[in-house]
Length: 116
Length: 114
Image (cartoon, rainbow over all chains, first blue to last red; front, side):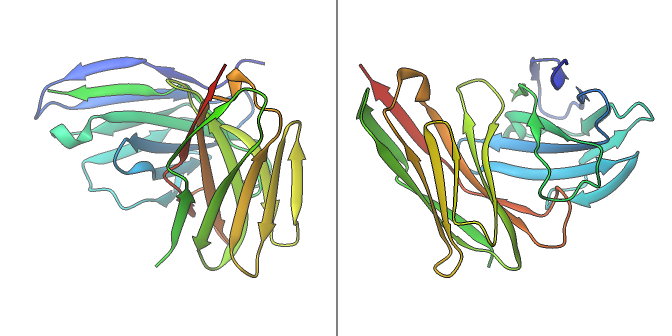
């Protein structure tokens, strides 16, 4: 069974641009969560989607948005990029039970975004 | 304030030795606590998940303990191997939420030297 895949793996953008990251969950998984990881802050939760609906959202500005498609693939968009948005962006998918917090999460390899 | 603190921040040990990583949390309401291993340049991989009623859980050479009274958890690694070199992240999930209600520790970076 293929794992969680994220594209692209690396991305370089300049301030003010926007970026879209993609995440394909494990086949059959319906919950997809996004995280930002930086050396200073560690891992921080961005948002979670389940069956095309945003179910939870972290404390990030509105420049960060996401969506989920009917095939459970998810995209994350960051508009008006800032230098501080440079980070590893991880997505994780969970089994198709109820998305309860005891479900195991499977992480993708991440997308390394650099903002110049 | 919900917080998860891990110690030490970094640790260097010799191959074959044991080590213990600590995680203290002030999270309420508590649902479960997880330990993840993250190799450099890769996504985290789940090692253990423990609910309120579980005290110990093992996964091979990794043994996690949870003391819900003192709100402390530890991850013990036995007979360390070079492949154990990674960051170990403690995560606490809040009760009643889905995958989104979680608090991350900043991790312990473990280096195993030959």
